[in-house]
Amino acid sequence: MFQAAAGTILFWALGAALLRITVIQSELCPAVTVGDVHEAAVEAGLWLERAGLPDGRYTYEYDLEEKAVQPGYNVVRHAGVTMSLYQLAAAGESRFLAAADWGLDYMEENLLRGPGWAAFQDPRNGRTSLGANSLLLAALSHRRLATGDDSYDLLMSEVGTFLMLLQRDDGSMLSEWDPETVAPRPNVTSKYATGEAFWAFSLMDTLFPAEGWESPADLTAFYLATERDEAEDFAFPPWADQWAAYGLSQMPSDALTDVHTAYARSLAERFGFLMRVESRRRDSWLSDVLHGRQARAAGLGTWVEGLGSLWLIADRHPALGDLKDDIRERAVCGAGLLVSRQQLPAVGEDLVGGAWFTEGVTRMDDQQHALSGLLMVEQILKADSQ
Amino acid sequence: MTGWWFEIITMAVAVNGAGAALAARSTGGERISQGVLAAIIGGGVLMLAALVGDSVVDGLDVEPESFRTAAGIVMAVQGARMAWDPASTYRSGDGIRFAIVPLGWPVIGNAAAIMAAIGFSADGPDSRIFAASVLAAAVAGAAIAQPFGRDNVAPGLARALGAVLIAMAAALVVSGVRDV
Image 1 (cartoon, rainbow over the protein chains, first blue to last red):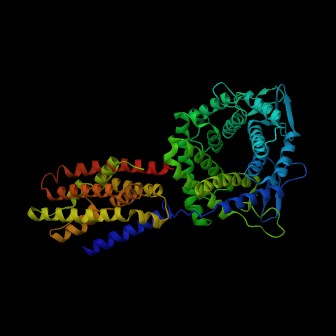
Image 2 (cartoon, each protein chain N blue to C red; image 1 turned 180 degrees about the vertical axis):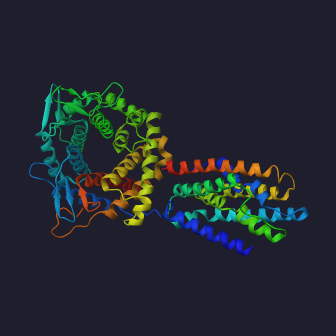
Image 3 (cartoon, chains in turn green, purple; image 1 turned 60 degrees about the vertical axis):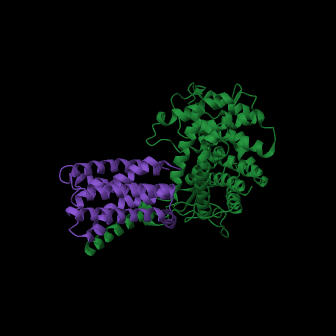
């Protein structure tokens, strides 16, 4: 009897050890305070400020080992970085307005214009994309929220009109404008940009409720919630779309239907799962093998942004009320991971402190998404103390 | 989060009374004593697992949803084993001591049922898991004690319960992955 018991115990111990290093690896969520997340967001903002280039762009990538700036640029990320700096300004750090306006100037200097519309065009290749312009509009919206300055209202309306030119009848969005045919490129869509456009429309509806932005916002919201994942052929829907979550959080509570809240719930489930998996990952080869490499801040940050946005919905809408605490827990966990992984300032290294490096390289949108996510969690933590 | 019926059915198929009956070899009056004692021991193991479930999950630093996924994997392995060859693993002998090992533990208080009890108790009220554990252990004890159908009914039923356990395990894994 005892021999059989000993054999069973040994077998169970081996099984338990196997489970422990795989499925139930400890999920570490470093504790953070409002001050921690705010300070980390400011450090990220300072990195972006230092990364500003004379022509209005930002340093795109920096290699820690080679101590060298890497070539390449992406104007969608330029618009996103600028938007995040305005978010930081709107969160009370008005000192970042100058850096954000510098990035905005670059976009203003490269506007393509048509009858009643304007669009930011990549000066290197003439590409005029839905994504860059959606985030330009989001940046202008946050600038307005941060400053109350209405001097860009006309441009906002023009960029919004451009986005509407890319909207199809079913709410889906074409992602490219062809300057030669002066029309959208047919059948070209983007898995990222539709959510970005929805958020931009939602922001416009919030800022200018009498101007009719509700209709395009609703149309694309419905498409995102019901058709987008299938249309874009995602193998494991829903696509973890933080832009869609931002947009939903911007919609008035009474405009959120069962379709919207069901979609929001599925997003919360996806972001929550991603965060649980991420919290198991360590900076070691064994963890890389068993759990995958730690997500770069541009990925982890988007999950925190998504969770933060969904928490805002759960905070005010009963359909998601039961998820509020879980969403909060995952979002705060993500912020803790971000804070713990942020590079500390180093003497003589302008592009190190405040950044997040993955395999020795940081890209400007690592700071953008981490910063935006941290600001979201700052709101959650502040709500805790009220 | 799982529901009351899901928990009862999962505990019942994880304990697998038909499989427990196959492990019992005694005859006559001793068989009844073995059944009663095995149910008490096995039920006690599962109640203890439910009692310490929260602490175990907290101590492991994992979310209940993640533990549920692990429980589902263990249940799937156990279910596959029962569905494949329910009679092969444990055999008791004559004598009341066999009611403790293997019938009480690890036949009734098996790995899948223990993982389920811990996982459920980390998610919901312990009283529900206590009740489900007592019920499942009592059914298994009765199956050990009764003399009928061991050779013709129990093997097929044990396989069927193993298959149901695989389905419950899949549902548990999916819920562990999907929940926030």
